[in-house]
Length: 160
Image 1 (cartoon, rainbow, N blue to C red):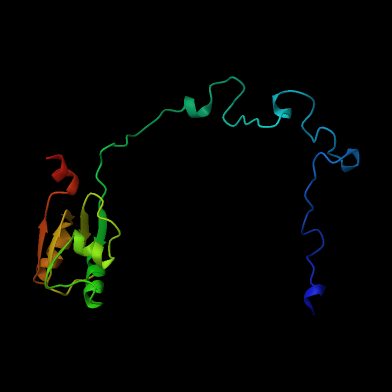
Image 2 (cartoon, rainbow, N blue to C red):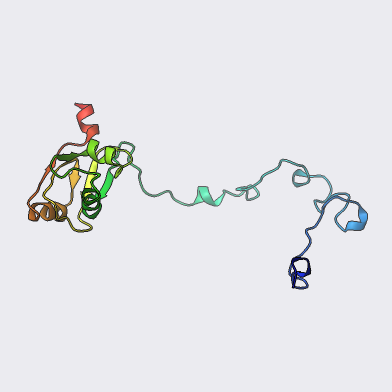
């Protein structure tokens, strides 16, 4: 078999309708849009319009609330911190803070601070200085002989 002998199954690929290409095409002259009226014109989009009835997106109640000044934390897992220490990208001897995590490439940007979660295992004795940490993460670090300092988030410091 050669490449030029390959072909699709009969009826698998349907030819697209070429609208407005003469009376012989079956969709000539008006192109299936009818005569006159808003929908026969180009550039008309009546997406949410329901014929003068109140549209469904206005009839349904709106629920919930998005806090405009909510804090967004960069999340780091203990297992990843240990992985970066093993790869010599983080120094366990020094205090590991937001700047060190960003410099190592573990966190892209600090946002409103860094929050440490307990996923994974930590074996190194580390001193963490972060904006937040889960109880289980603090326990895991202290069990490994380290210490976690939870500082105020960056946004709170800027407000003072």
